[in-house]
Length: 275
Image 1: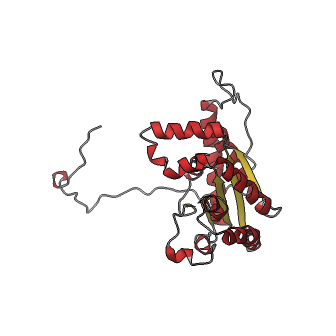
Image 2 (image 1 turned 180 degrees about the horizontal axis):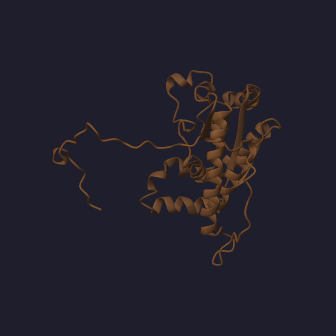
Image 3 (image 1 turned 60 degrees about the vertical axis):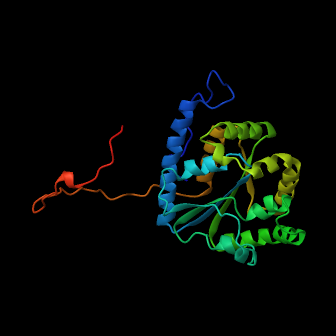
């Protein structure tokens, strides 16, 4: 971990909302943490580390928001997001973990899994998209699979975003009413509300099998989005050793226009300057 990765003292709550994080403080801390993330991902590249981070949780728990803030300032060639869709018929016939293995990082890469192989223990199980045999086989084999990844040298970090019933409802309503967020709401979200207890039981069962000493789950209290983002990024930084990478001094060369005649600007079609 970088020596500069220390939280500064500040008034973290606003007067109007004593339980919410002060907006100015949030953006200041986010920028500071994102600078540390840049150092981390450069160190991952320089030291040929392989990192996998799993983001799981209920719908509207804020996984996507955290992933967006992590990747915002990073090189997508080093840190990439994997969000797989519904498996094809061919993929359904494969070993369950096979399509995820194809996306594991090479040396010097970070892979953020927006949903992961844990789909089988969650939505697939609750919605009946897999058989009982497939479900129990997953719970028994998943810890061994993750142990193999870790023993191969992969740094595996698993986050579960925990959101209350009330807060999830608020976020669903916001998605329904906001034209910019309406696309986020799906028919599956309605089903997840009706099956709140089933999803709770599935999560508890999943933890009982896969929250192991070698590959533990880290639970993020996600009712406050700002706190959840900062807490998750701060914890992520603490899990991987890194240090500043010394960069060479760069002197930009002076451009010489000798021997070049620019074609008339009138020959080009420009985008209208509406703004």
